[in-house]
Image (cartoon, rainbow, N blue to C red; front, side, top):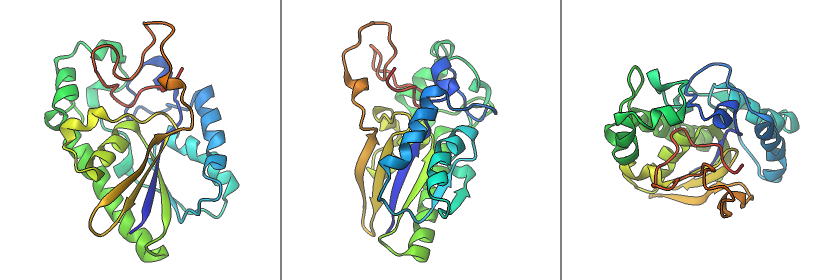
Length: 235
């Protein structure tokens, strides 16, 4: 079956503001995110792509635009099923503020039972995203052959949930996975099992360096919490 390249959108204005964006309109790439998007075509150079599929949200479309500019013949499709989690009443709120909500502990420790007020459950988020991947795998293979490669541009929690499914991990373990902004994750699907070939690859190791400031945010923090929505990546 097809090989899927998952690209998380570049760093956004919501990422740097520490806001859980969700489907809030008008969330764009910030200056660093724009630079990350501009570098994406070179990182994918030489990789034949049968198609690109994007979340309908602005930050994903902006991330793909430089790639589309260099590959004007690349078919582009939009699929709401790989759009960000519907965080409902949490959308647009500061992550620091949300950290005090009782539901946050459930999101961190038992996400398969977490449902956002006025939004969707994390199980529903994973289910629609995995369904989208399976459908696109079948379509790409049917139209381009079993060795075809295609790309999806999506969001942190969506990509983490797809990776967890590919690894046979329960959704309750998916907060152990991290993908940086504009990182590349690759999964090759076969008849018997998927193979995770790359995870959160940016070619940049800055996020692994020791912190100069103990207050500098990072995945895992000091108490092992994951950043809901995916985080802003290296400073």
